[in-house]
Length: 365
Image 1 (cartoon, one colour):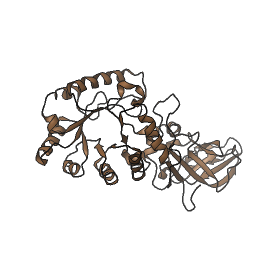
Image 2: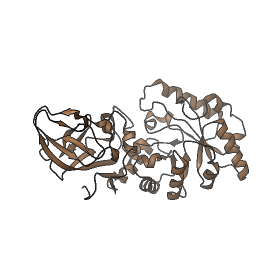
Image 3: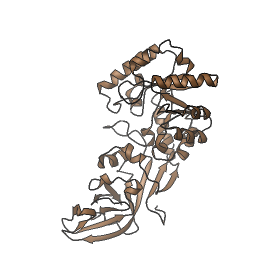
Image 4: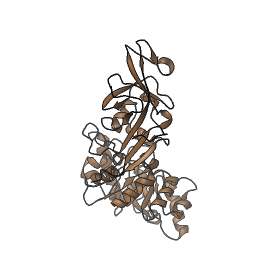
């Protein structure tokens, strides 16, 4: 139900997030399953998501930035928290002060962290990120192999080896095999250190991808980690907007800025109280849709800052004060992303601050 006085309503199912975490953990019985909760828990709200996962048994979390890690630490005093973007200049002291673990991605970062550990009087835990094909962050394979037997590894408190899969959502891609082989070589060169290889899609690549710690993110929040196959995850977010007005237009009339859409006959149009300022992408103009009483109604004209126009000719239940569903039911997060020419990740992380947010716990079991 849309709350009076506001625009759209975003419902987030915390029980579904917990169920998804458990479902992912079940793919590798006996191994630990972490949670990636960067970008405000993929737009779902860290302050609600992190404690729910902790209560379910999740003990390790990954974020991107120091500020996210500090916020997570305030919520989870006993959790293990890794900062994926590494040891940026001048943040080492803050990381140590909050007992946060940097994911070290270069020899320079490793040297700096080791020096900080020496000054602190003891090794402070960190992860070593090895780049096995992404060419973003991380030690090259040769740089990491050269660390075999180097005392700096222990001095810097390296307690986790990790890499990032390039195409885990495409199981047949040869790069997956190459990355797995390189990572196995690294583990052999640096024995005794736990390792993390599998992201959301990597969890479904099988036992060779599991190692010691699963590291899912997107799938926790309802995204499909197995594209082309049925989604094993439960839906998490539901976005609904009120219908502000319904009108009938004649053939030849246009709708929206720049008259991008022209009626090919008499049509009924409904205007929704939501727009790109709410995080609903303008790129979905003329491509996306909403559901009104279960009827798929195309978006027509350009999406504007605060309003979206639907063609509701085939939805007799569309009335002023009614509700349109923009994410939910047949319009899952991946479908919405594809319609906007992007991915579900971007839709999730762009969920706006103007929504009325409702948190429910109804589908954990």
